[in-house]
Length: 158
Image 1 (tube, helix red, strand yellow):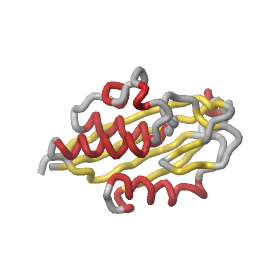
Image 2: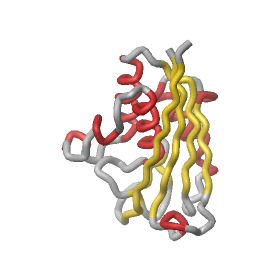
Image 3: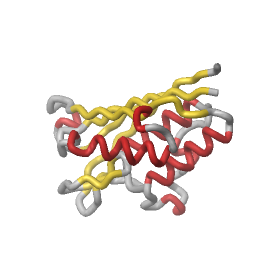
Image 4: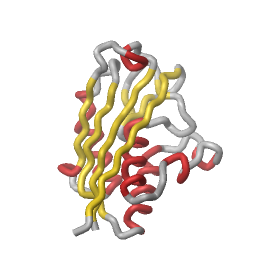
C-alpha cells in the first residue's frame, strides 16, 4: 500500500455583513469571514492538505481568486472538486484530522454537523473525519477576535 500525508492551513479575518461558514455549516454569529469564496477556513485547510498530499499544488493554484467563477462559491463545491482531483490520480482518502482556532463563536455545538457534512461531501465514513476546536488563549489575531484559522492533516492511500 502506498500512503501520503498532506498538511493544510488557512486564515480569514472577520467581516461584517457576511455569513459565517465553517466545515460547510452556517454558524450563527455577528460576523462572517472575508474572502473571495465563502471563506470557509476549515474546508480550505482540508483542500490544501488533500491537494498537497496528492502533489496537486494548492487551493489558490487550482481555484484562483482571480477567477470570478469562484466568487462567493460554496466551499463544499471546492472540496468536492478537490477530492475528485485526488481520486483522479488514484488516491483515496484515509482520514482527516483538523483543528479550528477561534476565540468566538464557540464551535463545540456544531462539530458533529460539520463532521457529517464533510463526510457526505467526501463520500467517506464520518469516523474518517476528526474536527477539533480550540482558542489561542486570547493571544494573536485569533485571540483578539480578528479572525479564525484552521489546520488540517490528511492521509491518502492507493
